[in-house]
Length: 337
Ligand code: EPU
Image 1: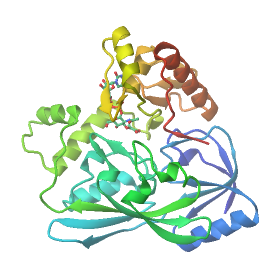
Image 2: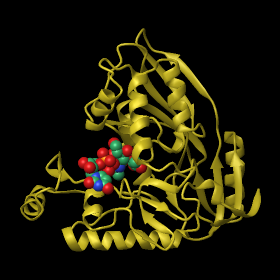
Image 3: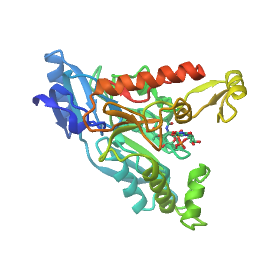
Image 4: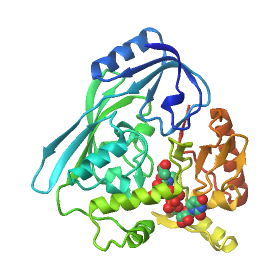
């Protein structure tokens, strides 16, 4: 247990904020011990995974617990399917690479997403035509109400676009300990429908892609337009892509003929990056904070010296200008602490 501990290395924005207490846990028993400590001291809790989806806007007056449970196991279901379980503290991309090395298919479109396995179900991480719900089997969680370990299946997780029970009713109640995925051993389903993948495969002159080729294409696309958090502090997409009623979309189309929209039930999903760019934010910097020059949905700690508060205020300005121009209220995807 460390006191007055800097969380700067533990958040991919790289902002400075101190936790009153900090500990790292590698076993469930250590986690339980830390929880008992927080209870006896009446401390608020903050769970940290890879720190890739949080913005720390102030010091945290409680106990920050970094989940460092490690290990990957496999169980064959049949000739073509395998259940692969990774503990929460495994790095997501390394886990994807491990699966690809074994030729297990299903996660290749999710290559190079920052963060850890344990946080992947929280917001049902997704990219390039795949979300984890497509291959998710179950996850084991510790219920903070009774310190018991329970299992959530696919249905119980209630996954939606960047959403799950863990962001809704279950918020703050469960700690994800491990996640199990159903992956393919052969007969892989190759997903190339996301436009950028097709063109990248053409660039690479690949006609019949393997899952490893898809991963390579996704890595190239991400590296070409998303900043590497190791070099420039960021938390990926800062906002969700909003979904608006069809009638509102049609009205906007009258005024802004280039607006794009993807049908989503009876609503239309509009790319937030486009809305933000149209408001003149792409590449714009105020003080230490900027919108990324190649993908305006990503807010960056441009100088490395930004405070969480500055980043938050910058995001508020973006929300205000998109609201003013398009009448659409952007929702933050990143957790604000
Ligand atoms: N666009 C612009 N200007 C911009 C950015 C995007 O006009 O500055 C347009 C693009 O031209 C494109 C559309 O918006 O037509 C969509 O852009 P892109 O394919 O880059 O995807 P996105 O909707 O901006 C989402 C996810 C990303 C994920 C990509 C690829 C969300 C909030 N973000 O971004 O996820 O990598 O799709 O699937 O859904 C993340 O969550 O951290 C993340 C990076």
